[in-house]
Amino acid sequence: MIEKKNKVFIATSLDGYIADANGGIGWLDTIPEINKIDTGYNAFNSQIDAIVMGRKTFETVCSFDNDWPYKKPVFVVSHSLSKIPNKYKDHVKLLKGTIQEIIQQIHRQELFRLYIDGGGLIQSFLKEDLIDEMVITIIPVLLGSGISLFSDLPQTLEFECKKSSLFLDAVVQNHFVRKQKS
Image (cartoon, rainbow, N blue to C red; front, side, top):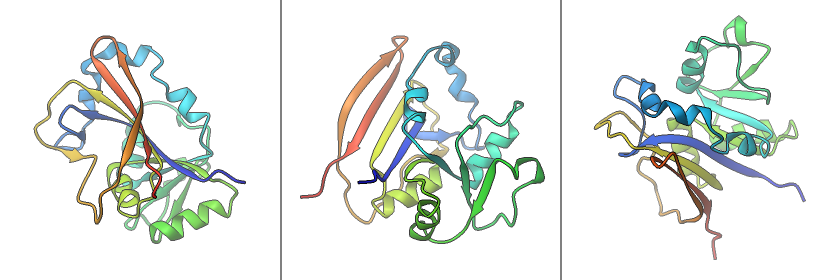
């Protein structure tokens, strides 16, 4: 049987924001040493077939001053983008539609274990109860406002914490798995 899972690997501030009020992520460097240690991203990445990200996350990645960072297929979900910039056409496919339509388009390509990235997209997947696992790394900084990881949901979603890790005596990472519905 084919494993179909939608997973999240993301960092938040202590107050649950994934970006500051201006959309910035510079606060992630509050503890610069964290970028030099293994926090599990490579192991997580080995368990996915493709990355599905929202437009804002895609634009943030494009703003980095380095080569394209992903080796897996990347799909950008956007209602406002009409095309992918030429520089990224070989790396990214643009998708439009409902969350269910987007998943079907990706699954037709034999890609079933998906890394969902970007606040709005994660929220949309959660609203449809389509997130199976979340690895949330908490950076000990309070932003006060910004882009929240979570938003209102039509129903309660229960997760179990399978593992908690402490890095550099400062950063906490929790691995949550969706509780099976009874």
